[in-house]
Image 1: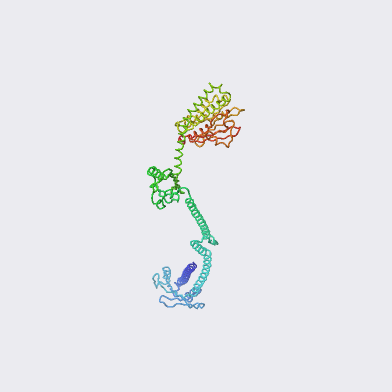
Image 2: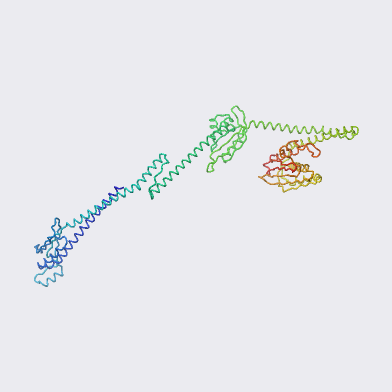
Length: 589
């Protein structure tokens, strides 16, 4: 940069000197030419008439012209008329100027009037003036200009060097530091900082570069942290997948399997390469393959979850029941990037369920058969007991009558137990279809049936607003009659029973609450009271019952897809809360 400035200054100085030299020379030429022209003008008449005295006077006057060395006047025949020298000038270098003396038309007319005998042509050359001028002073001026220009150029060059040095430190050095910093950053040294001592745009550039490097370092640190977390997450996933009790499979967005854990290989009874290269659908039992394939294709095309229970076929044609579940994985753009699925071996559970179903069916069948078979002996015991009581009461004596009364009471209790057991088994064996019904109407019918018990106990029932439900009408009637009947039966001696029935909708379910101010119960037995033949108050004439009523209530509610819970406190009443679905699809028909 300094070299460019120096060359530029030299070129400019050279041009300046050349221009000044030409200007000085032009001014010198114009000045001496003007002096000679003036002398020639003044000498026109004098030379024409050869007046030497006048010529000498003019020449002496002309000697005062600066730089004039000598001047001479010649006539038309080039004969010297007069000459004068300026003794002050001893020139080493001089320049001669010659100017013709020409008489114009006016002057010739005047002269013709004086000398008619000598006619003259107009614009006649009558002589010439020859002047010798010294050019030493002009050259001195030129030398002064050159000297000044050299000095000025030297000063400018020095200033340029100083400015160049300044800019080298203020501009080039920061740029060099930026280049060095760029190389270090390219080599991976993000801790290097650029010394920001410059100002202006370079300083702003250095500051911006430092900010950029800092942000880059932060981005790399964040990326490394994310990559580290991703590696740790993959390791955790791998560890969990290897120890998971269920099979885990991972699929691409097109449904191709790319990962399966050890438990999945165990369930499929296959090696990893075989699972990844061969479609898992080929391993499904022929009876389940069509349904599962359609569900899987719908999952892939519609980007939805997949859930199904089906069978796999092992290489030895052994079937294994599984529950398969697949869910789409979404990326940051909410697009499906793949699928993650699980398969759980439920073969033992399936066998237990089937065995339990057979057992329940056998138990229900046994209960029905036993109930019907036991009814006839109980009727005979009751019949013969009544005959004995009517016909042979006096002959039995007091102790005999007591024994007979116990036999009849036991037979009646046994009959009630048989009827309760039969009613319990009929909840699932002989159900009625669900239909829309007003639960509030059912409650009022039950209250009407319990009118005598309410009058005897001076009790009351308050019913809130209850919406329509889809349910079995007979079972709803049995449910409400058992709950309201219990609230009336288990009332306190010192307080008439007050029963309150309310309902509200919670999460698309109707929640019904039946509360009373009766004797209550210990809350520790809140689950126990729903067991078959469970009684918290024992057998007594005061509180009759078989212990089947609440178990029937629970089975009815569960059959409708709801749940029932009991809350109580001894001496402060009880509260039964049960839920019923408002939609038929949620009921377990």
